[in-house]
Length: 336
Ligand SMILES: [Zn+2]
Image 1 (cartoon, rainbow, N blue to C red):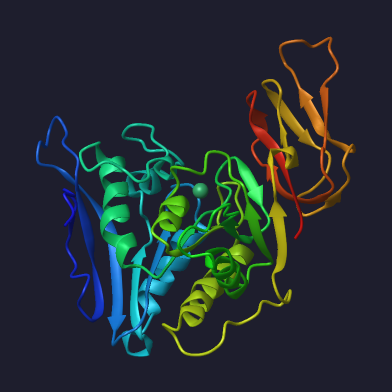
Image 2 (cartoon, protein in one colour):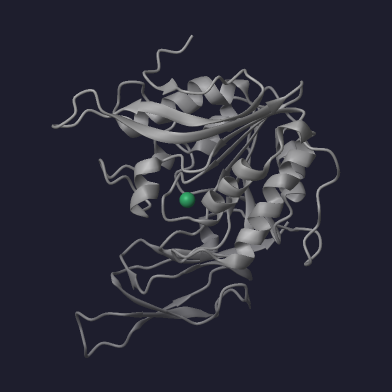
């Protein structure tokens, strides 16, 4: 039994298509009993696995939000065996603002897990997802893109699991699910600060779970949207919720890649304006120039040249021109 203050206004155990809200308390000066309405759609029929699909964990990542709105409208309950729970704009205040972080309190929702029932909007919503939704899930996918700051080759993303715990097959199941999603790249990585993410929370529950990176730059990329729409239906086929086999993209099977450690990142050592040497999705060499960091503070000094420390594919590139000290400007992936 959960002690969550979040009230779902759909019956999670009922069949058919239900469209409603999670009602999350958010007290304000002008509305002490105010709530924030987080959209939820449940499509269920017969018996089968439960799949949780989420987007809008970060509000400035759009491919997942639009793909899940499309799925929520078009998924025929009669074609489903099992249950699909869809949160197309999970961190609703950030989605409505088109921002990565919460306009309420500046929180990154993907650093809030496993949450706190009485820790404010983001923490109580994270706690609801962790304590009510994840325990009933077999599969979970949290759809991300690069956001305003980054641009990323469309990829299904899983964590490198050091210890698969009770289920030693979890890594293999993760890879199979990612291949089924069918993005150009299936990527396993060690994430910066992965611990409080939804993906890590799902793994702790033994749920076969994925994230993604499906474009970026704060725009809706039509090619990445097509990959995402096909991918979420592919996942439902992989899980057995929909009939049929996952459909392969025009680029063929996913290329399995990894970002094994932080040596595959290039970090800006100072504030500045980033001039990349290479476009996204280019094969690059360790030691080659990654780009120039221009410093407006010292017009007489040459720009700082940064180099790649690994050979591989320029998988993620800084999109926004302005960077701060410590920001990644490039992430290199290599074949598994
Ligand atoms: Zn994100």
